[in-house]
Image 1 (tube, rainbow, N blue to C red):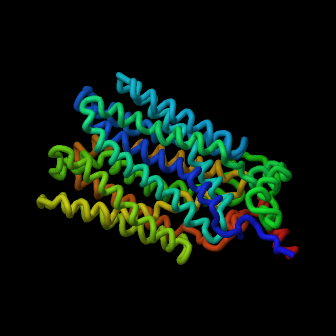
Image 2 (cartoon, rainbow, N blue to C red; image 1 turned 120 degrees about the horizontal axis):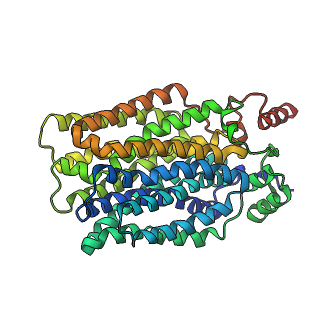
Image 3 (cartoon, rainbow, N blue to C red; image 1 turned 60 degrees about the vertical axis):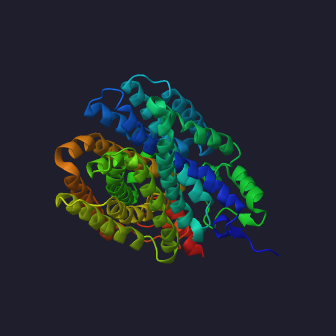
Length: 461
């Protein structure tokens, strides 16, 4: 007689990589859409007279939209299901990306970029929840972390596409913005074939449908989990109740402290390199592409380290090293020394590879620390908070850079990473080798129905 196993005990298979691809579209498009605007803005500013405020609005519009999309999409995916919204989002992204080509007014572009942000923000929590709920326990951290790597693939790809599209001349910025429609259309058709999450179905009392999906994917001798999903009503405020509030604050704070400088620096890398003296021709765009491609190097060792040594050390120490790297860049700029292009790129790479590596926790912690009925809501809330803080930073970044210079900018960003180091040191939990039920039951009060079920199960065993 074959031993009955759970979804979390199953080995990696072709199916898991398919789910990774379906979910990874969110991260890829997020990175691509945010990255392509950096090159497009640089071209657009030479043709259209725009104030620093309007430039900042275009740069931050997508991030502001992600605040709305994250808050709304995360809650809706816990309420209505993972699959439906996941498909609709890609269709809307393809349509809006196409409309950007025809815009003639900067404020029209602000509106379209905001809508794109809403759709991407709604997509993020669904992607994380689906990947989490289908992942094997021993590979969950690396699979979720890999999604963050696809953000950098999208981001680096946008700079390469933007660089090669410069040959289109004055209209190149239109083609750059249109290009995001291509991956959106591909993902729309791919996602039509994906299954709904069995954990979500069981959490809503639809156990027969959940078991049918599990058996179809894994076979008859596989069950969803050892701890049964209890039917619980999704309520937004639950992310602050029953011990969840501590984790909500932790995730929102550490994530914000990482992405605010990442988005601020990343959106204006061409301008920053220009202030270092590399504004000749298109070298600043090529340098940006090289920097973001090499950032990916930092991802791969972390996919191993997070499973080998755990979540805490792979978040704490990169925060500190990123802080020191940016402060070093600031000191180099302040000294007035004529820094070489290669040396500047190397310093960016030291910062970027570690920043990329610890970025895997943006997907791991919010999806492991919360139960099924609020997993999407918590991820969406965290995404929303981090994007609105990033939007504010991106809005004021051009003026800060213009008024205070490169060195002060790097000092400020380095300080944020150091605060992140302290937050991670005192608050980051360890969830390595835990099942989803165990990880989401840490620090929960006895009033949480999910925790009550888990405690009863442990007692019976």
